Length: 291
Image (cartoon, rainbow, N blue to C red):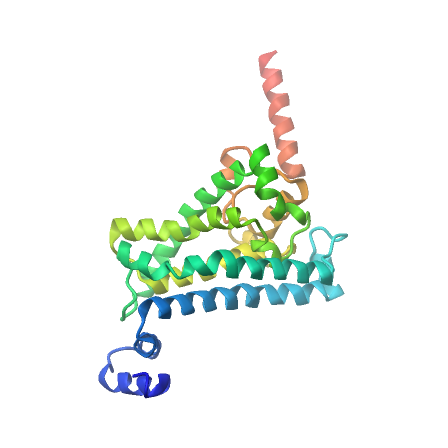
């Protein structure tokens, strides 16, 4: 296979696997070409993460340079400078190579250990959509409690303070954090699917990749600093988004959840003027009842 090259191997695989779709044949040819599953999964995982992270962040960098979009900027008087963008990108890239890359090389052995499939055919769209939805809910719970814990004094000063360097976040700052925080929060992103697979024995690595792509999109967009009329939370009231997370960076407390609003709502950790007003009204009503 290696002597034929990737595309030669793809043509050969296509001849004898007509039941597979085009993307499944591309996938099969990649593993056959590499002849090393750990290397094949590692390269694909790292390349996917870098392309998605910086590819999704780039539009926000461009938007920050176009004055017309300032009308949608949540904190309009705080726009990141070019230096801040470059500084942030450099630290994030450094973290990716020194913290995340070594872990990615362990990804395939961990997949094998819990029974996560890397073969073809791919699972159905319904199966992937259902599993990704479950991951969003479970990871959001992990993120809420670990993030809230990191705002406890010693943990905040020793770990989480780096992420709050920017009181007005921007897309690239989604993973601007200490190595410890990257590992702790990343454990939820990777650990939840692994736990699901260990229990159900039903998970494909493609589903995991799609989950990570959606999670990266959510994290980057939540740090974008922009609120649009078409932002998702206007259509899904329980969705968090930039409007929810931007207040957290501005006030340094409250709004701890990542994807959804229900943890902050139910546990009374919402931040912002409206939340403060509701709390005052509750206290007044409670005082009146006591009288």
